[in-house]
Amino acid sequence: MVEIQHLTKNFGSQAAVNDISFSVSKGEILGFLGPNGAGKSTTMKIATGYLPPSAGTVRVAGHDVLAEPLEVRRQVGYLPEHNPLYLDMYVHEYLEFIGSVHGLKGAARRQRVAAMVDRVGLGREQNKQIGALSKGYRQRVGLAQALIHDPGVLILDEPTTGLDPNQIGEIRTLIRELGEDKTVIFSTHILPEVTALCTRVVIINRGQLVADSSVSDLGARAAGDTLIRAEFEQAIDPAPLRALPGITSVEIAPQNMYHIRASAGTDVRGAISRLAAQEGWVLLGLRQEEQSLEQVFQNLTK
Image (cartoon, one colour):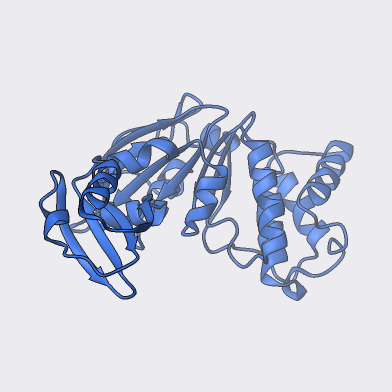
């Protein structure tokens, strides 16, 4: 488990992270979202012991990042946003080295390296120099080093950066499998990835927490009107539509389309259908737009 309580990090007079609190349990995959500069990477660096907090506490598997930094590092696998690798080393050689840093020795280390090479799909590349690999394969090497010591907590900052669609699918499957028995926090700007993988989402903006909910409940957290698109056979007088309870505006679009906004949480489709029958309008289509995760994100981080 990762527990973050009243975390604050100041750089001079600027608060990069401002009094945020949330926790992540074992078996949970948390999408950690926010615009550039929101404080995501700073929070993750504090959780790995890379940066000290200015105030508040972070505990990883019960260990405080300030009081027990070495124990925290034993519990965490970390893939930073800018994947630092020794480009002159060979893939297999590098993973052996990282394994030795984590105290793995002899046959146990060799077996673990072989297992990680297989798990992240580096079999054909393991005898190449890292500097000769594509960006996508370098990212896989970064994932392998984060997993080499079998940590209970994985913190992944933009883990699918530079991967092609096939590789992204493979890494998503891997993260989903890892999330069954580990605590996973990952940051991404690819919002469909959150829908595909996450059980929960935390969003921060300008260092402050603005949302903490399941993916399915996130839409209800965002303020915003309901948008309905209505198509009629002929042009209509929008005044009766505007007069319906709950409708806040009606915009006339080309080809007899009307964009109707209603108060958040209001479903006025039945009222529109009844009005069309009453007025003698031929209603060809009526669709309520679902708020996408992207729209929710924009509403919360404007």
